[in-house]
Length: 294
Image (cartoon, rainbow, N blue to C red; front, side, top):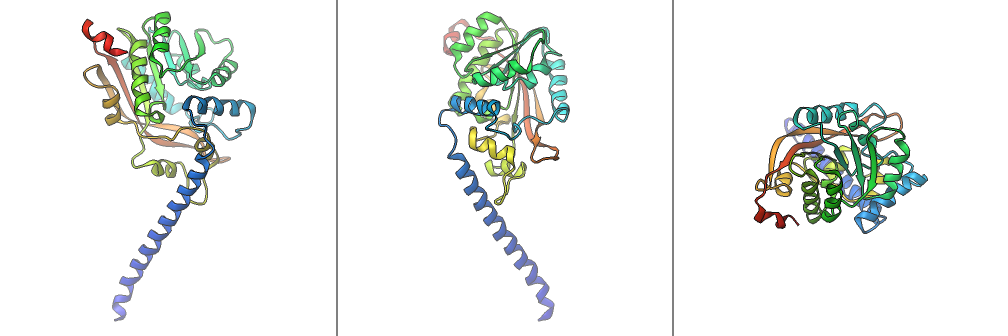
């Protein structure tokens, strides 16, 4: 009988591991639910409340999706190299969801002019304050999920390229569709969109665990985002094909990449999370289809 005892011990260990994992998951779900109760209800107010909190110091943790200075250069270098190889860099670029302008400022090294756009006036104020005297760089507050507002900007700027990082995955399907129509208006006949979005396999808990969350602890930058911002989601090839259907859009290129985040603790290193990138252009539409855009 003693020969069979070692067989039982690993099974007991597996059961303990499974129970421990389940308990940790329950703890994590409870923590996330409690933090989520603090969120403002309307998405546009969520963003402005967040950026005002950052500016006023009530939100003191690093902004989740911004790596420490110098640490995120590899990610941004990938984006810039891809855009340089696939897009007309003689066109201006609109950075949709620019936040405090960190990436907008870096795009000035590739495009002749950059317009950073964000739904949050507080974000735009922060971007302007952090970007003095950079030729060709400007910022404005605009809700890009309102196609009419985007069309007005398009009539002012003419054809542009569009850069979007980490915006589509936090929007509802309806707002994703509206943002795609806005992008189409901005691109005109010659522009292209470069998008990069988080694409973590599994559900929302997988995303949180990738960033170091457990049932007993959620890192500060992540805890701050959960309590103030919309829930993250997937945006990969499947979602892109739904939001940018082949009948209206040409897929130029796509592939996997990573997004760099802020360190999850003092002295830590930035975390990289799985992501997806794509470059697309609108297909020419017949005159009978133009009105369907709106």
